[in-house]
Image 1 (cartoon, rainbow, N blue to C red):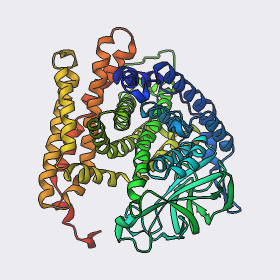
Image 2 (image 1 turned 180 degrees about the vertical axis):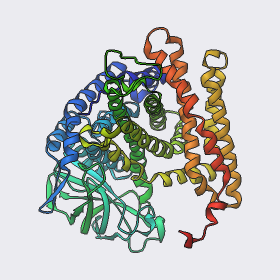
Image 3 (image 1 turned 30 degrees about the vertical axis):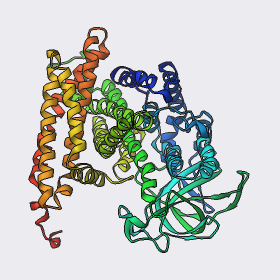
Image 4 (image 1 turned 90 degrees about the vertical axis):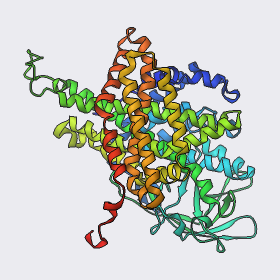
Length: 593
């Protein structure tokens, strides 16, 4: 049976030692009531609930899946009770605005609890997180009356939320959606159309489901500039807050998927459903992207959570499974064979997965801290700089962590050999479940093109240059620590490669419109590897003074050195691909394919 223990020691190292988040909370008026003792208690309780209640439902939920009964969706056994416990524990409103019943915890807290949630049960995780994302968009763009009516119910877990973008003919290209909205003269709109791939579109976990739906008004401009966002509840809400009549929205079917089978992925039909405008007319994408960007960070965390639980199981298996003998001769002479851990290739896979996990955890905290600064900093310029950093790194954290998370799960599965392919060991489920994270909330190829096109080429690399300057400042602060040369020299070299890749991309884009798309994925991975090297340098700088205190710090330095020596050299391959340009790629005729 699969095992999982929340990596609380490493989480606390990243939060309180590497980034000293408590000091940043105390320096921020809105967060001064947040303390280390409080957050450690939150993490301890989060781990306990996740390990004892949600983790046991992961396998059974996958086996049972969701099902349609009488035009309604039933979630697997135990999910409804677990969701109620989760809601009553206040977990849905952990990071929410206290004005609407939330607890107001910063992102530097919820990023850790989200990792635990995704590790133990990604299907379950999607139900509350979609509601949180919907509530975020509502809170930033809807009227005060709408916020007061809907947000407390979502944060309490009484109601859930969704985002309805994709249509049968329109995925990434939202400008061609066909769902229509018609003003009714009383402040409401009639919404008609079909949406597909709607996570949590219908289920039995809550009394009501609040759909955020992209649609076009009759006189809307063509393309993405003519999209508006509407709030469409499953049940209409009376003036006193009670539930009224069923709205004109029904589930058409549920998808039968490769993974996350306990998450209901629905076709939703809107037939003259009543809805209310969120934000301004024809500016729906701006409002929806508040939710989309939140979900993209969550998907990166999904990749991390999956690779963490996969690592824990693969490491446990490698310690116990006896296969062959060490290249140096028998280690366990009293046994028929040595444990798998004596073999160098097994160690290569395990160390690569763990090096990814620990760098990814540090990276998500780095982004979370920028999100908190963008929200809470008192200085407007500091808020803007932090928001720019988040804009730059959002596609990286989503795509790089999910690409590497999938690879990590496959490597962890490989440690099991044939048992990794058998359902009872649990590893094949981790591979199936994490695969979707590379696809939804904007495929990773689209994320990469967002990075190269919007975040690099469009502003002539200004965001990247600011990031490079920050890393150079870190390197300067470490120049008198020769014991850390194993970190600073490879990081400096990777930073040069990132700068060279950025310059090449900017030069190619001047004369070749295909350059940005051709280089996108390789550039994103070049960027992601450099960020990981940055994170390892931060962790090494923190661990070095304590390496003799206990094995935790010494092992941290060893694992970081492994990343720098064995994994970071990939930046050279990625840079070569960026420099190659688009000409050969685009030279094949369409008939060739």
